[in-house]
Length: 150
Image (cartoon, rainbow, N blue to C red; front, side, top):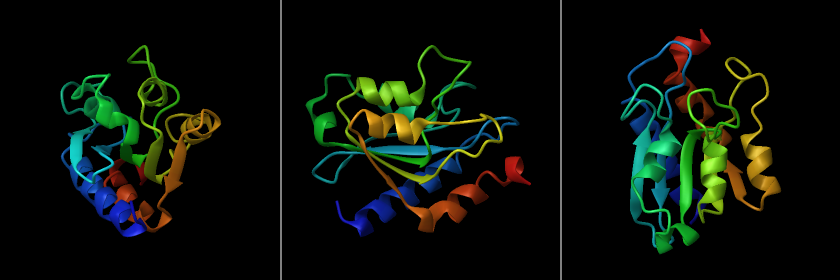
């Protein structure tokens, strides 16, 4: 994937995040899983299927865990994957690490607003996942979450 491809997919993920029903105390996040061939495999957004589902969790749930395309796939998420969670037994960081995905692209890191110290990026990198941040898209991703950040 080129940097331009990464930006294009992240812009699409930001569009998905706008579909999230707004919630007090929860970020609106979009996620897309893209195969090595550049084709979208799945997408999801926060609160897509229930009040507690996260974007990455929703996208991953749409594919079989043993889907061979996941090994070369990239997961795009508008926000750093969660590393702490009360509503589910596994965090999004853990779900990614249980998958064969080894490349994650994010727009921005989770601020300490809801979780004091999110370590999704650090945990993924420590386990050999390539994590790319796209700081040029932070403002677009943050605007979707203005209801929490103001």
